[in-house]
Image 1 (tube, rainbow, N blue to C red):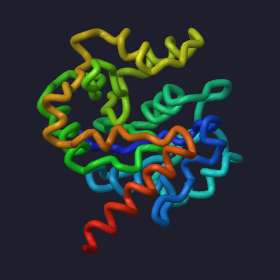
Image 2: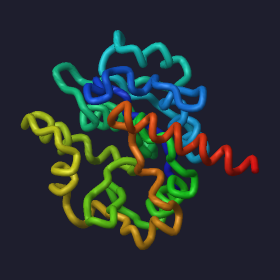
Image 3: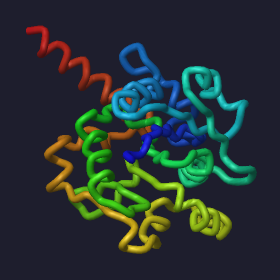
Length: 215
């Protein structure tokens, strides 16, 4: 039986470098959060939202999602959100997780992740490796078997996603090399918005692209 893929958007961060409210920042008339949601909807049966608390501004969009997963008390960050999402899964459900600041996620890349997961049996984690050899956890596919170990990792006080991935059993994880995933995507899916300047740069690039396509 093929697994049911659940898209999870990690939007619980405080976005201090951005100045707050990053997931709601508008790009071409739509919040960044919606760009990611629309991409995940093309390959997942449901899309969930990960938030840190009901009072954060992004919570106003929670009705647009099948489910909202809240960070555990006293924990925050992408690993806490991933833990909450994994805990909420039912039998035969798998998470395809992405962050709220990846508006250029491509459908071929997400589909490639799904197909690779289905081809490689017994994995707990599937992610990308960039051309510098750096692990790129999101977008990535994650199995609920990760929950116990992730709980222990979070309890240790360490919040590094890459450190957690590096500690997983080698037989249970797979990093897709750029030689493979660049056949699906030219790297745009990993473009993420950290600062206001990143968003303004992307707005300019998309506007120039629109102008060129209209010629």
